Image (cartoon, rainbow, N blue to C red; front, side, top):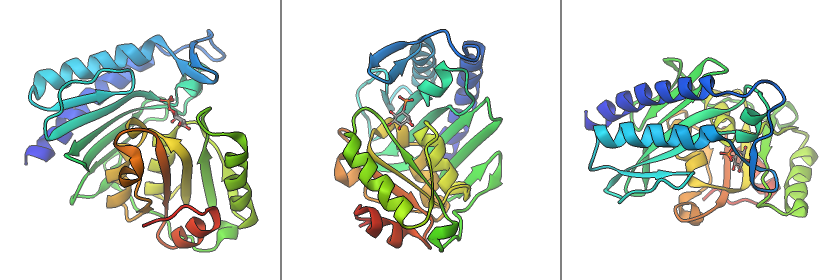
Length: 260
Ligand code: IPD
C-alpha cells in the first residue's frame, strides 16, 4: 500500500508538472534553447519542472531521497525518487511532441514504480512492480514479433557516444533486416518497447534519470532488459538494451550487448 500510494501521488504531481511544461512550451522551431554541450540542450522548463516536482514530492514524502537530471539531489533514504524533468529536451525545444516528464521510484537499487507523462501526445504510462504496466490506465505488454525483418528497433544517440560505436550497432540492426528508428526521447522509446509499439531499444550511454521510470514498465510488460544498473547505471552513464522476449536474444547477439 505504501508504494501504491506513492505511485498515485507521483502520477498526480507529474500530471501537474507536465501541464507546467506545456504552458512553457516553445512554439515550433524555437526560440533557440541554451546548450549544456554540443547537441545537449537545456531549456528554462527543465529547471522549473524539476524544482516543481522536487518541492511537491519532498513536501509529501520528506524522508524519501531525490535525484534529478538538473542536479537536485538530496540525501537518499532507502526509497528514492529519480526525475528527468523533460526527457527529449531537443524535441521539446524545437516544439516537437515527443518528450515527457519521467519520475521513477527506487527501493535501494531496485526500480519499483514509474510514471511517464507525455502531455503533447496525451499519454501517461504507469507501473508498479508486481501490479502491471499501463498506458492511460490500460494494461500493456511487450510485442511478440520474433522475425527481425518485421521488427522495428530504435537506437538513441547523444554526444556521449563516438560516431563509429553508434554506426557499428546501427549497422548490426540493419544487417538483421530490422527497421531502424531514432526518436530523441529515451524514456518514451523504452515505454514503446513496453507497450509493443517498438520491438527493441538500444542506447550505448544513457543515464539513470532517463530510464528509472521505464524500468518497472518494461519488467511488468514482460520485456527483456540488459543489466543496466549492474553495468554502472546507478552511478553514471551505461548501456541499455530492452526488447520483446521473442527477439531479445537475437538482437543482443547481433549488437554484442549481453542481456545477462
Ligand atoms: C536525452 C534523450 C535522448 C537520449 C539521451 C538523453 P534529455 O535526454 O532521452 O533521447 O538519447 O541519451 O540524454 O537530455 O532530453 O533529458
